[in-house]
Figure (cartoon, rainbow, N blue to C red):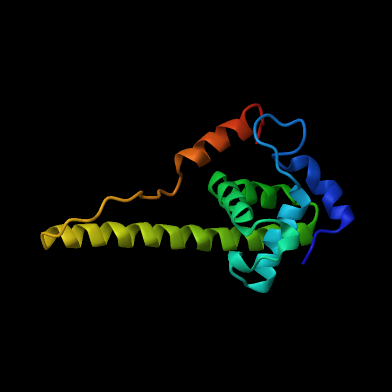
Length: 150
């Protein structure tokens, strides 16, 4: 599943991270969206993303930031005139919701483990805890959304 040229013409002006936008710039928005569609259509893990799409971790982190900011959901809503694009973005939104659910489950399991271990008198070794919206994401959102009306 890839975006064709006609769909790209409709979509390109709506995306954040393009030239002329304040803040961070995306290297290639079309390649990024094609990478996300590849992951979804192949039901694959991020680490198996082909090298032609760039580094898998960079693509995943960008996907996650867009997901946390609601950009995928906004794009789905904006595609009311193109049913195939709307369907593509709906699949991305559903996938993003599953990813968010998995992250929340991991955070909850970790918190429950700490509570359980403290009840047993065991101390949890100090390590960095991830949250659903970390500081780097908040900073990125502020840069990208500055001056953008959504």
